[in-house]
Length: 80
Image 1 (tube, rainbow, N blue to C red):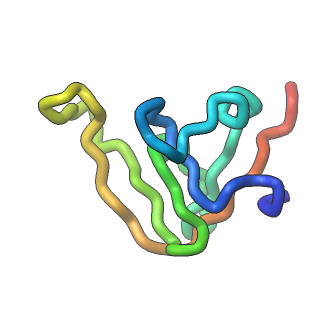
Image 2: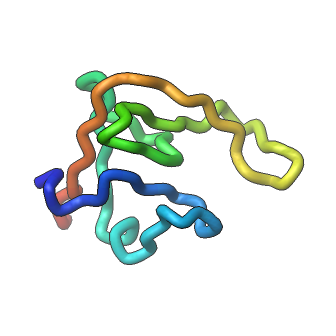
């Protein structure tokens, strides 16, 4: 199923890796075997995710993120 998904995807509309139609379908991320719900951006080939750090924002209003390294497994969430 991960073959259908891009290598890199971001939730920020200003990013070149943003894909609104794909995000509306529902993407799930498994990082190091755990389901993550606060992922802002991921890259499968480089093995990292950027996750939001609480409710903190930078000076431009974007959420503050940290980059974590490890195996990333994106998947399409089933339709409910």
